[in-house]
Image (cartoon, rainbow, N blue to C red; front, side):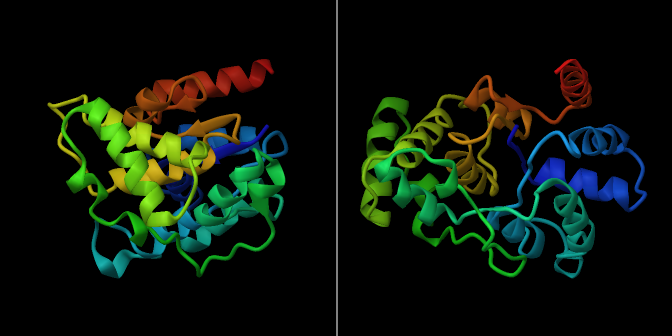
Length: 220
């Protein structure tokens, strides 16, 4: 089983290893996944750990040693390839070797610069937004229409449906991450908002959802 831990899940597991209270369910999930699932790190983890959008700059990177411990136990030495490589390789189909490799490191963050301002330029109408986003993503990246570009455009468009929710600085990163990993994983462990946009393979990060995931793992 291939599992992707978004930054919320991974950092809460790391905080549990550091002895910080309030993350016990994530600690139990960490133990439950060991030896039963493959959970690789990605350049998105590097970006969020070393260059967080929020929080004091002096705390950037403080979780890195504990995160490295988490992924050392769960990844089997594998990494998620950069989104650019994965999306380009999707032109020939979806293959696991195009998703995972041994070439990652904790120094090279994901590059989101091709998508700068994409959310701000998105049309308000969801149908118009998807068509515009798909064309704009392809124009900016030089990619063909592949699962990555289609899912990213869909997530961007879906974000226009909830008029009561204010966009967050992390939304774009979350959408690019999900578009990269979702076609390949058995489960994406993320937050409630992204879970609602993605569907059945996504699991939110509330305690009751983590506990339900633990129960399902025990039953497998």
